Image (cartoon, rainbow, N blue to C red):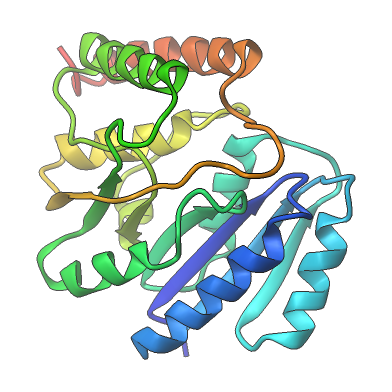
Length: 235
């Protein structure tokens, strides 16, 4: 029998934080009394993340591990999550600990009224650089795709959207996820944006706030804009 929720933990070189994130997620999902699975996707880590994940899968019920033999990037992690998840609802949780599992307690009660639930942490408790990047990112989305639902953090959506909304984006970045949000918004899906709290990273370094990732995402966004314009989904 398929679980109600698939919580997908995205991990690349997060051996220091992964265990706390998975145990917190496991505790919260048990408190919600919903059927669930936790899928840890190790994206070719070289710091022992995979070993931590395998040990947690042996110790905790409902946890399984999928490992990429080499680092393939965030886009491939999302694609693997889409393919591996068996739940009616899907959520992706970074393994860096910046988003507490308690956020899912905000999302689950909204299931009856939504097909997609987006967290929006705004600029609270963020560095000046992070606030600037977030503002520039939102301005770019508006320029390329028009007005979109507020999103900054983690999300949850019905699995059937993956069957109904064909995704074309490839590459290492998060553009495939943005394509899903854009297509869902243009299709008139019921989308809610919910204020959430994040917390600062205490260990490790960001995998997304760097020039190479930003440039890769920018080029993918332009390709997506051209594709959606050709399909008549953006003006």
